[in-house]
Length: 256
Image (cartoon, rainbow, N blue to C red; front, side, top):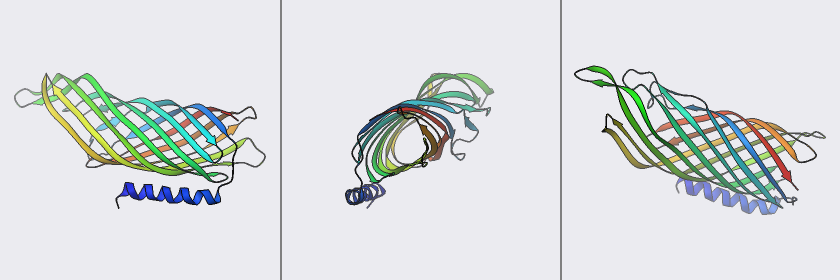
């Protein structure tokens, strides 16, 4: 049994157990928006001398509860700027990231949920840039280059989440963790002076571990503000492991 099937089997077992232990809950709909000051850390053995500016990721989300059943969807989109100061490959490149997340869950206990998840993720770039390159006759020179990239994939898996209120207080703690696995389609090309110098197109295995923790406050009118920390650690076949982490802020409103 591969990792993906093992994860799905574990989720199925948890859902069966959930029907035995769960307590009924009221229906509600929560809508909101989130901001993520996301720091991208690339594997040094593959991206030597390349650094990334923090990306300002934003997006909406929607959570619906029907008794003990949960249905959710969210998006994050933003741009990371990569820098290389190396004389042979110097460049600045903007990479756009777009995440779409969908979940279907169940309240196992009063403040503890389990869920299945689907993530659609993409990295894209299409940019002309001035870069340095090495010519065997002239040495290092400046030239016009072009990068085209379109990396997309779908990951499936599951996880757990919890919201723990402080007694007789509007404040609460929250946390979640999820593991997903799937395939990524990698496609990118690099040209210099109109000449194609690098072309890659392949499908690779990918895994993602995501977790978040934080604190929030909810008013009696249904508005809430959450501040926390999130980390996504993903690895791809022959591509090393990269991490995206940073502070998050969310504003939401719950209809009951």
